Amino acid sequence: MKLLRRGVYKNLYIIFVVGLFLYYLHKTRDTEHLSNVHERLVEKAKSALDQVLENNPRDGEGKSVGIIFEDSGIVSGEPQAQIDWHNYTQETAERLRQGPGEQGKPYVLPEGTEKRRQELYETNGFNALLSDYLALDRSLTDIRHAKCKTRHYAARLPTVSVVIPFFEEHWTTLLRTVVSVVNRSPSNVLKEIILVDDGSTMKEFLRAPLVDWLKEHQPKAKVIRLPTRVGLIVARQEGAREAKGDVIVVLDSHCEVMINWLPPLLDPIVQDYRTAVCPLIDVINMDTFAYYPQDDGARGAFDWRLFYKRLPLRQHEVDRLPEPFPNPVMNGGLFAISRKFFWELGGYDPGLAIWGGEQYDLSFKIWQCGGRLLDAPCSRVGHVFRHAPKGRPSVKGDFLSTNYKRVAVVWMGEYAEALYRRNKHLREVDPGDISREIEIRDRLKCRSFQWFLDEIAPDLSLTYPPFEPPDYANGTIQSAKDLGTCLDNGAREYGDIILYGCHSGGTQYFSLSWKKTLRIDSEQFCWQVPHELGKPVTTSNCQNRDHVPAQSWRYDPDTQQIQSEAKGWCVEADWKTRVAKMAMCDQDNIDQRWIFKFVNRQLIEKQFPPFPGHKDMF
Image (cartoon, rainbow, N blue to C red; front, side, top):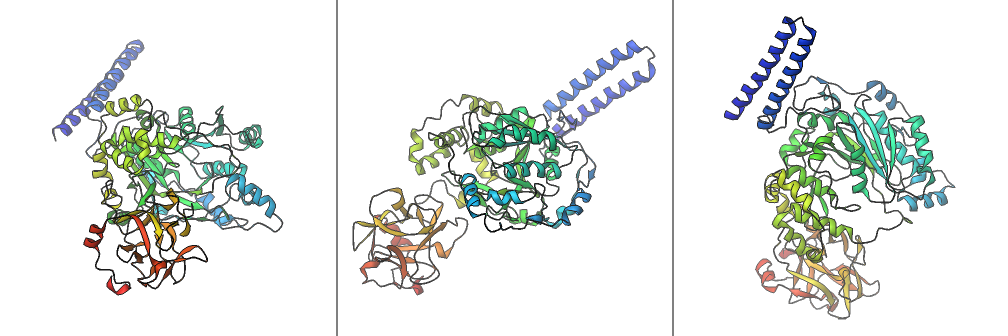
């Protein structure tokens, strides 16, 4: 209360100074004297305002207030009227459109295009030929939450610079991204689009033809060229350096934005400039270009190998939809952040190379250094989730490990140990010079990673414990019938568990974890029981959030059988097809006997009842 009273007194002082200025304005007739008085009083008022902001920079809700967005002149936290930003004329016209891919519908290429389709698919990782058949300004069906269609936002919004890095991007997907942004953004808010060419050399149309096309059709867009490929992280940073708008919006180069996408991203930033906001990311199908929702929102998270994960919204967040909700970790490719706040945080760590880890670096910085990260469900952006393109020059060196090590050392404190236990090589990785990041962390008085886990992502450690209980069993799984044969995932993320010669490599390392999941040497892919007897065991994404019976297993060290909790069936070697299939349990069948390299017998006996060999005992 004392701090609030001090803020009130100082604001009253500003009013007094401004009032004094108005008094002189009306009383004096001497122009030169008036000018001098004006200058002195303005400086006095600025000084008083600076003092108020320095001593009380946040309001009673903890929001940063009083900061002026340089380009638009808007004051952060200043009360504003709310208006409807929809462009109803354009939306009505879009609803009437018909044709290939219109309304975000799937499209099928005509016959006789298979060869060209395959060529472009391999070099781009998606159906680029089909993209060429769609209008650059194609319409999308409005799939937003019903309440979004009547939502109002601040009448004055900060200006925006949209930064789009690209590397060997296909012509029409890149242009459709630009056209989509221009057509569905308020013209007085969209200041510029900055396309950052990350050293493309393979496609001539990305050179002069791109510049010429933009000049003729989209003059708000420009291209900056990087002499060599430096990766997404540096490319975004270079685009941000060129930005003149109050807010930087980062997009990928194969996106389409939804109706009225921009005001929901900007409104929370108007309220508090120390805010970053992400849209909901929809799916543009890589084969058909159908546009459909991924979901209605989830919170970004990670496991302790720094694989990106998603946590469900908590009930109070579901109840408030489509209100923005706090997001622990951004996806990384699509977000809005005030230019001032981005550079206060130092931008991206310049020691991060190419891609990977930057979403954690920026997310941790935002939260731990006094900001907030939100997802705005009324803002939706479609993204082409593609395969890795073929024929592009590969990047040499293990840049990802260095990136992760830098993030861990600077921001994760003692929890870096959780990463090292799962990625033992990270202990020896040299993070390079991190003095700049440490200086930023100390200067901004950033909070600890423990605070982040406790306050921002309290359920993350429940779903992905940093220091897990011991496994029931782990290591290679040998066939008791042939000790030279082991179970193997076939070097595939998804597929059947196969029989293969033992080699002790990563594809043959499995863990029967404390969650009763049988995992490949990570927490990302788990064994899953098939629906029918005789079918092979497959791998699928681990459903770490929930207990999933189809991914729950048990092992009996006496009978050496592996049994499914859901079905009560046992894993059996099929020597003809060389796969691990499911069969009715038979303790006398040697094809159902498997030898783990390590078995925690005491833990198994404590947790599980005697092995019955059938479902009824579960």
